[in-house]
Length: 111
Length: 116
Image 1 (cartoon, helix red, strand yellow):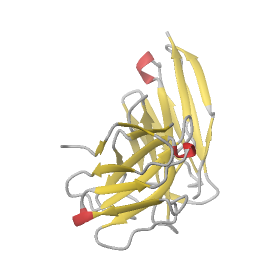
Image 2: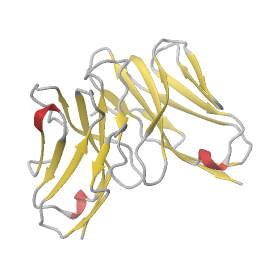
Image 3: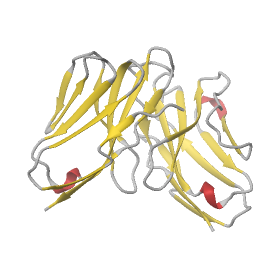
Image 4: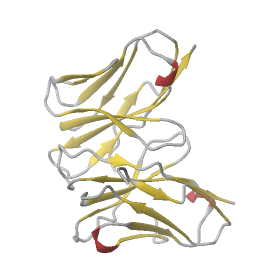
């Protein structure tokens, strides 16, 4: 099935730094989701975006639905060790009936 | 329970054996999905069910894989004559309805399958 292009593939940052990752698609999407997966667990939904240009925050996390509707961004401010995990984007297009998932961004926070 | 429940959490078996993985979705969720996640990789869609409709099996990698959903609730994913390349985490997700762009999927913790 279709996969989204997510970057960067991995990040190693110092505690306290800000983080930015993004997801792009060749198709127009009408929904973007961001998930976090910790070792040994399933993905947990962080933020859902339903409108182009929408900017939504969840604590230190902020995600945006790109104006072109082909991309989305996730930012984490003032990272802490418990932010470690793999972050996945997922998108839903008008022409399909399922969500497509990105390949993930692995985040390591160095104390 | 409140979330998607999967069992077993870990399964180790010998090559050639059959395995059955179980998923209990969130109560009231009519859509159920199975994904496979290989080490360090993203999510590979396998199959989904919506209510009593025929499932979309387009993601199943071979005819050794099958899934059923009885009574519109619990689902089992069966892998026959397992191969070493079947080793992965198998994730189940459910959503209130299928196909809705405003219906995010909620995941279980997965079954970690290791084929010796």
